[in-house]
Image (cartoon, rainbow, N blue to C red; front, side, top):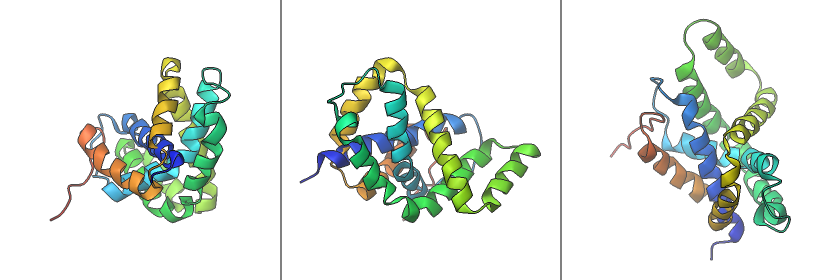
Length: 182
């Protein structure tokens, strides 16, 4: 049986992967693999749950899913972050690199890529919270919580794989997912 925590996690992960799409909008880029998109989704869940809490705190019930089980959901995904980080980082650098032209943007990405992961990960986590929080319309808070709760029972690895496959179908111009090889 699929747990309620997994369903919420999948919804949150999907929101995270989709939240990254505007960053790549209009830019030509190398394709991102389904595994990288899935890793980004899994890696992002704890930060996305925090973004929902920060943005939607006044809109959600104190007895709702995020309030009751959000920390547990975040913990399940946070436990996988060290494992998925290398693929997530690779995908994020591809996405962000597509928008960086020669000069300072490229130098900044090269610098970030050369920093130790222990220095980069907290910056990435804070960036995800900031970006996601600013993109959540208040009128969608209850719907987001419902979707998170509905998807939470799905195993994080399965959720990441589904998101990796779905994102490439949603808007391939904004998030070009590499075609599968037969």
